[in-house]
Image 1 (cartoon, helix red, strand yellow):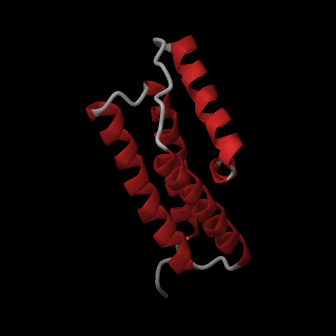
Image 2 (cartoon, rainbow, N blue to C red; image 1 turned 30 degrees about the vertical axis):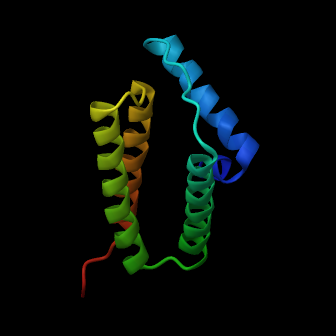
Image 3 (cartoon, rainbow, N blue to C red; image 1 turned 180 degrees about the horizontal axis):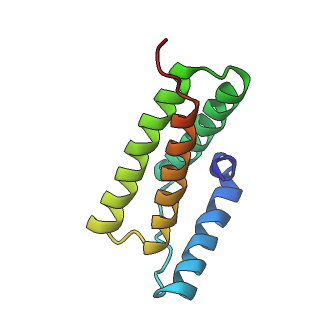
Length: 114
């Protein structure tokens, strides 16, 4: 899903899909009109996410797994913060689940020092 954020027209379509799911499951929330600089940061985040995933696949290590687990906890906390304090749709809470599962998987790769 992160790769979708890296490609400008696909990123917009991905957000439109999330807002449609929000409307089907909860209440209709209009997709906000984001300024170009916001889309720039969405795309940059997508690129960084893809590059990080490639590094994790190509160079698996305990250190990177632990770093990834910590980062996923922060991402989950940020999502909860924005859903609770701003009009970010509830459907975004689904990503908290993916981050928590990802954290568990990453911690499974972290080996205790011998």
